[in-house]
Length: 264
Ligand code: BTN
Image (cartoon, rainbow, N blue to C red):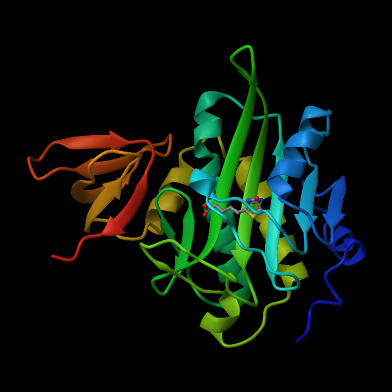
């Protein structure tokens, strides 16, 4: 299937008529970064529900300001503007919410069950398929808006991928056929809407943990500028912190970093 013709402002807005998010829809054939655009729109008062979608990103960003490749006609690059549920515990669950919503959408349409790699990645068969980038704006210490950015490699992998720690791929290469991006986007938006109503419960953490990559395995966590920390990945806290059991038996919480499987 060639879904290039099918992925447009009209087809997307029609598919989202009944959804909680996607109104207003800002669709771009090509843009630098949907998260950057979302931030500008949010700062200018765009309401909760606004959704920014691009067919191509020329300056897509990942965590730690890494480049995120979104080649034309083949990926999903979307950013949600959220405003209403922004207490600290809710904000800290947003990366898990984004990962879970993406994993469910892939499962619902592609008959494959993705794993969630702490903190923000969606993996299938030992390869990264999608990532989440959450950015929040505070005014006088109070959260004003939050951007939930989601990128999925759908029908082609990234043009360039330079992370030394792992490989990336796309859904089509894994399941053996192309995926309709409008359907995948609609399912993703639907799932974000459902999970957004569950932020005050423990269910997001519990469901995220069920899909956790390398749960109960020996991993190392690479933080910024620190020595890697090794331990057994036990799970996550309600605020998204990684629970790591050290060789001493002590259990610590880690709030940021990148994980890697340790071969024993
Ligand atoms: C990561 O894995 O490091 C996060 C990747 C997040 C990419 C998405 S694509 C849509 C949105 N716009 C961006 O510039 N980044 C996010």
